[in-house]
Length: 452
View: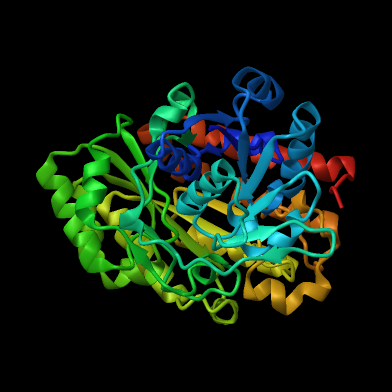
């Protein structure tokens, strides 16, 4: 069969100027299908926004779409557009939102929704189509139906070591464009799935049933050897919580002579409790760690079930700075913030002597405990607003003032003189993206158009 896999465009093209990661999930799907002899193409519609032309040229039998919550309407519209030019086309939807809220894809132009890991599921779907059999016996599916979704038996999450190596040849024409801030060109690799933490704002640990799934370090190194890009992003939900495994992986990377710049996720408590692990990784190329700081208040951190304290945050920031590793500190602004909370956050960030920080809005994402607890308070169901920059819970401050304070964080929380060492090391791109994001927020405020 001929299969076209599509990474849909972003809900806001500006975000693609902040980061643009390779569509690794689709590269996994394509690799699995090729093992069965199918012809596969991958269209990254963020870079090549003409899926109709791709369909007319490639003439696929099946199209696979993936996306997050902010992509829901984009995926539905894309399915309709493709069905218009090819009514017999089989359209499959998978990805994060399809897993946590599959019922939102119960529309006529979508034929099958995949829940959870899709590599083996998609291979079984294609096999069923070729054999003319139905899908009811395939685990991990939701089948759209006017009377309500029809669900098959759930599929247990796949052993990560059983998955094929992603086919990066499918994105050969796009690879020079993938980046995150100053890391360009950038490749992504998955070494684990799930998380040992239980934060109430996150759905990732729930998707795997609370399990933390790992790939063998030897398999990770074998894949790293095939990657040409000098910069590597570990797109794990949480990379470092299995300390022994990551210690072993560092040894294997060093022994293999792999020279890369690494960017990964790490928790505050892992950094504090295992500083020696980060020191080892610094020696083999760890350049940046994304750290979800979330807040400066111990009370709010406890309410999030974050499992760390502000005192640990201060320790973690110093440990990484002493090691020469950039902390990509991410804070979530609570819609309940008052003016004094915004001021206190600026003071706190400056106290940490951070060189880089980002600020998002605490968002009740589908599939999270936060969404379940506060669903009745949510201000809008418009999927495009689930971008972590819109306040979807009631704000204490007037909405425009809240956004103004949010924008102020981007310009005042990290003094410019602290940014300079990062600019010297990584270049101007990081600063420019901050200015663009700041300008976007201010433009919305000035226009009085907040998209609700």
